[in-house]
Amino acid sequence: MQANMGMAGEFRVVVKRVDGSTKIDTGYQKNLILNQGLDFFGGNNGSDMMAYCVIGSGNSQPVYTQNKLDTAIAGVSGADFSTKNNYNASTDGNLYKTNRVRKYSFSGLNNTNISELGLASTYSATTTYFLCTRALIKDSQGNPTTITVLSGEVLEIYYKVWAVYDITDKTGQINLLDGAGGSVAYNYQFKLANVGNSSYYLSQFNNVSPASSVGKYQSVCSGDLSAITASPTNKLAEISNSTMQSYVASSYKRIALLPFAVNEANGSIRTVVLDAKIGCWQIRFGSVANDSPITKTNTQTLTIPIEISWGRYEGAL
Image (cartoon, rainbow, N blue to C red):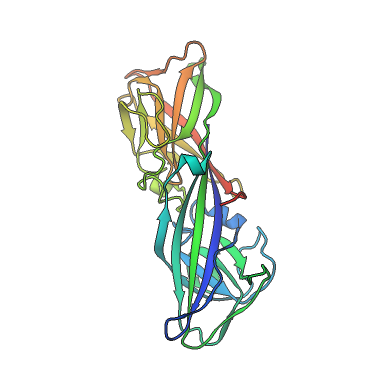
């Protein structure tokens, strides 16, 4: 069973004159999510891929395998500027697209040439940072260009990172092991949950790490699947001790383990709700034989593994 998120990024460069008027506004341009940026979600390299913006003067063509700017000049932390987490079925179709915009302000540059930039999840110096994205600044014709920030002017970077989800149902089959060598085959149906709820869709750009568990609380319910804008009802149990298997570099996935002890989740388990920090999903179980739910008693434990994966989104925004 797999929960998946796609990533994309855009940036906008604005230069303000000393009097506050706008000298340059490039509008939004696409950037590259680096392989290292995808590895960020595995943990251990900061908690927010949008924590810092780093600017530089290099001009090499961005490639997935880069981990630094060509020539870094400065880096600053940002502040949240806006977010989008609404869903409109008539216009959004089968994709749920959310985004977060952060603003980064650079002052005191004093006649500095800027041609490249990127997001970093950690930053302590121009030689020490964890770069997640990279881009060259381009002119109105789409050609790489250099912007000169004069003394007294302020450089503002607006960075927009998108998280994109496929809202169509996913189905498959698993075998539930009984611990004594036997198994029962179950069909599963997998779909998004709580779409449009800011409590679940404003953390997509944080890592999925064991230090913070999988997310908030995982639930098992006797109720059936709901619409993607809600979640199943009739909660049987809620746990906060979900864990993650170790991340393998360049795999862009982690396995979440949802454990239920003998005194938890006893009854007929029809659905599970997974809050994975980078999204929220609901999963329905029905036996292959007769569509009956999973039945758990107070003499049994239950562990549900779910793969959480992420990658680049290359489609239209």
